[in-house]
Length: 207
Image (cartoon, rainbow, N blue to C red; front, side, top):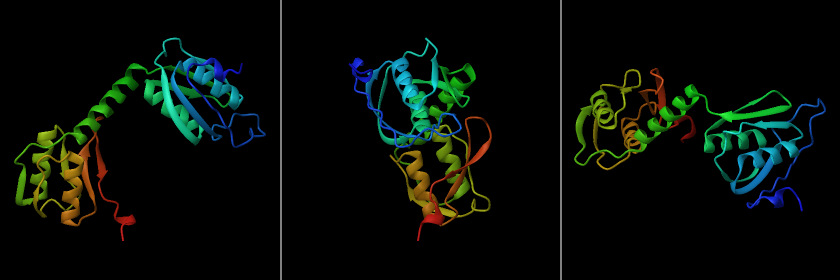
């Protein structure tokens, strides 16, 4: 019986490239995985065997892995698995080390998730703007969602007339930046405390 068949889940690894001549593991190899509720130790061991590298999985990493990807670089798969079961990895060219998220990484992951939830939250009923400056619109939406928002550069005085009740924050922001025909960006305070761009419309890709 093959190693893959020893799992209750089905795990299939199909490689599309040979190992690099340098002897280092090529995490760019394309791999297909179909696995359901499999122990992370087994998944990483089988993946490492096919990639010709060693793997060390911390015993504290226990959450079962469910994943189905087709013809994807191994590095992307490792990242995807780690994100799904909240662990982190280190790779030194030949050895793969898997361990639980550190306290700082866990805080970062939790903060990022909470930030994403706010962007997907729905705005209250009755939220309507009539000829309101963009800076005031963003302030109102930000207050409702628990976010800090501000206009891109000199767009703050542009007038907005729009009904955003029931829309997610992201949906509302996209509709607003399309209406003012600006750069397609608003500034947002990130979970880390710095300001960053939130691009809602990519003008470079639109006709």
